[in-house]
Length: 106
Image (cartoon, rainbow, N blue to C red; front, side, top):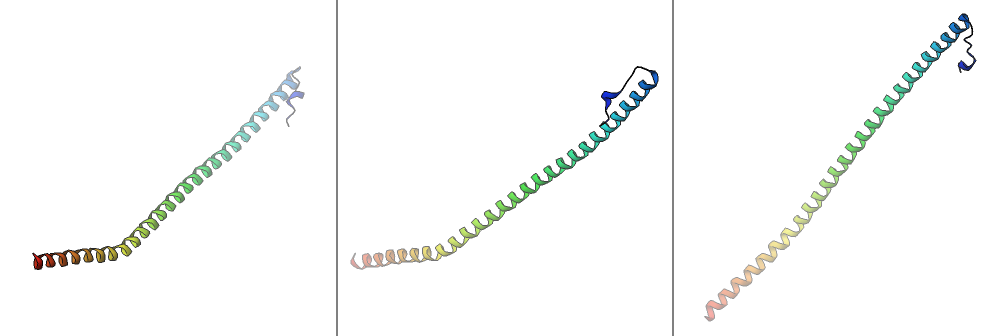
């Protein structure tokens, strides 16, 4: 502490000492403000950097999830296509048999 409350200004010498004490207090205050400002700037940078990293991670997770869903859909399609093809062939063969029977009877 600078004890500015003890500054006496009753004489010219004491007033000069008080002014020197005040100048010293201003210098210390400016230095502390500069230090606090520097810390605030570093914290600001860290917060922005962390927010950006979080956004990038979330974007990456979303991309991975989309790729996994696409893979599952592709796998489902691969398993359904042979069954649907077989079902289609069976339906077409029934129609052909019915036509032949109709032609023979008809």
